[in-house]
Length: 153
Image: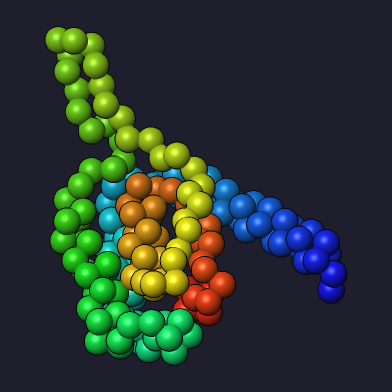
């Protein structure tokens, strides 16, 4: 495949990923806080359960870091993050000030482009994905080429 063909294929893939992410966002954007939090918590627990396996893949693929270190980072990026955001309101009316006629309403942005480095690929992908879920946004991850497999996992 020529460089030109490779570029065109990459553009087509990016468009397809964006289309799929936008479709997911349109379904997810109207969920209430309770449903969002159930989904985020399920993702937290799935990520935490896979922490060591993802760390092994990341170390093998990138040649960086250690399995215990990356496992700890993956665990922090899941349950550690959850400890900080679980009570955070991200849906609906957040506050009202009737005297001033103000109302603060949480509104998702849409699709987030997440650049994922080779240094801490799995913990970064987990962390960003959970933040996007908590805020009812979709995410398309763009991992460093030397970390694509572990981020896809």
